[in-house]
Image (cartoon, rainbow, N blue to C red; front, side):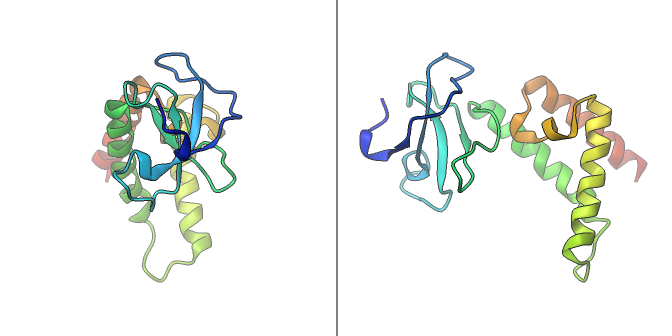
Length: 145
């Protein structure tokens, strides 16, 4: 059970994909051992038995779909492998616009490869199968140089 003092909001329509109970917006310090540098997270109501969660924007919108530890780690692996691919097309003197363009182009290629709409091509929305497919894409891009 989530301690009430951590709950910020309960008006989210999504349910935990693992146990089908509502998620709650909580201060991230609950799951990050007292550190609130991560802001807020949407967390399964069955926490700590179920640790499915996803980060939240400042406007409380979720950054993706809640995930348990294994899937969160896989998403992190995808992101940490993907980011250097677009960053290698930029320099320290690249403008923000140039960096955004390089990033957007690579996400567009990933969305085409995965046959997903661009607005659904975010690692925080991916399931395990989609993460593995994204890692295949990344491997192909790395092999192509």
